[in-house]
Amino acid sequence: MMVENELHTVLGSGPLGLSVARELLARGKRVRMVNRGGKAPAGVAVAAEFVGADLYNSQDVTRVAQGAAVVYQCAQPHYWEWPQKFPPLQAAIIEGLTGTGTKLVIGENTYMYGDTNGKPLTEALPYAATTRKGKVRAAMSEAALAAHKAGKVRVAIGRGSDFFGPFALDSGLGDRAFLPALQGKAAQTAGDPDALHTYTFIDDFGKALVVLGERDEALGQAWHVPNPETLTTRQVVNLIFQEIGQPAKLSTMGKMMMRIGGIFIPGAREMVEMMYEFEKPFVVDSSKFTKAFGMEATPWKAALHETVVWYKQYAATREKK
Image 1 (tube, rainbow, N blue to C red):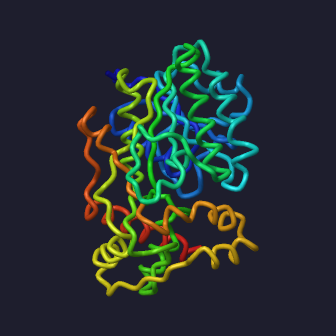
Image 2: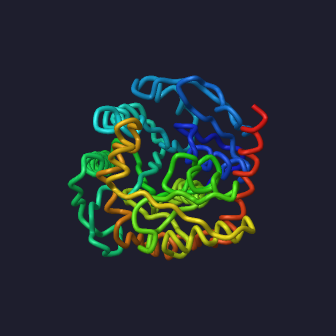
């Protein structure tokens, strides 16, 4: 169990890192957030200590982790830089924590399993990815669990699906869906809107990583974090518009349009190889986590209410600039 006021270090100050920090602070913990600049991102108000570091430098990792009970790895390079920069980032983090006794909880996605052709994803599936980013994720997961098995660092892994919620702007259910909806326009999504798709509420993702940090029985394993009921993307969009109080409008982008967009937008170009997730049923089974730790996902209605409230505040802030 965690000790009151103990220190926890969060690597990265993006949406996942911020959700971990919010959960830790709610539990009365001291939080050190680490990014390159050592400052809170614009528009972020969180009662954490911000520290600057180069996480590709293992000595910097050791420094920012000093005194921490748990380190949460939520940092990542740009999406289009994963093959070149993600593996050395994790390697430096593991090296910096080796021998310190500090737990390492890693936030991941589900790319390593590859295209299961609609078969539900469980933690028991082989790593069968054929995409570049899927292969990177598989290799990194294997390396982290190997470091745990070798006794270098105590590791637990939490895997989320495509997430939504506060600060999760650049995601499959991010600003391109919520901001147009708030303006009475069509929410923009990708792929087949009538295919089942599991989405992860970012606050549940953060809470789940904190739970993994609490529980020693989580170590040495990967866990799918709890998700709300799997619906089709169209059903989710309908719920968004119900929360806003407007008739639903939906616009979808297929693989061809994503390729065209990728000519100008690196993130869109990199998304093309992952479009299988949105073109057929993509269902993530998180029952292992719920059975082990008793945590249930936030229901859709409550999660979308919190998300819409945040986007309204975000939109209002943008209008003032």
